[in-house]
Length: 243
Image (cartoon, rainbow, N blue to C red; front, side, top):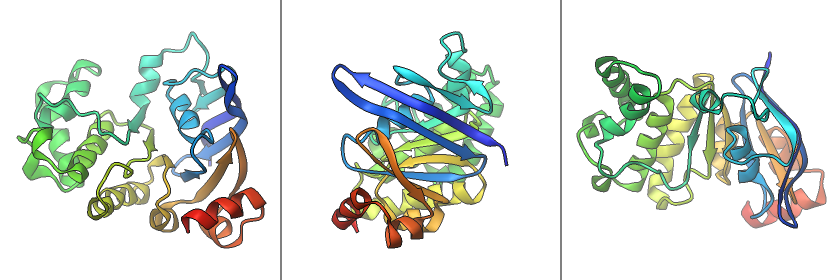
């Protein structure tokens, strides 16, 4: 299987702080990779570097062999191919759910309105919210907003989906509805990088778990290898706090 994402010796300096310190990672097409680690370990910086929301100080990132980090790369095209879901939804409050999902396909991809809306309704059905098409974000629960955010990212037909702690802002009873949608995506073969400490999702859907600390990838393996049989002391200490 081809590498969908290749990260080579990623370094990111924020002044004297090294958020990334030589991280390298390959992710195959259709693979689901969960990234865990303490606060400030570089997880979100690594994720955000994949669609150049963070610009690396050193190192290279490729998606399907195309450079993300080359300054001459078309960043708009890269971002069309990489869907991103944040912890705080980022929906447009003045637009309906349907319009939130169709705005980028119509404006960026120049899709006609009818086909964009047809696709949006299909995606809303996929995330279990087709009855909310005419609603506004302010009328939705946190879990519903996050499912709309996932549908919006999918509307651009991305090759890769990035999730940055997608359930951390949600009430506990809403977490499952978002994780169920993510699990369905994994089953459909979507390539996913997920920063999260949701261990149930990790065991159910992740192919690999990456443990990061101090900007480096300390250990990686299957969910059972990492959670039940971690080798590195740093990993074991971290897992004591979250398992």
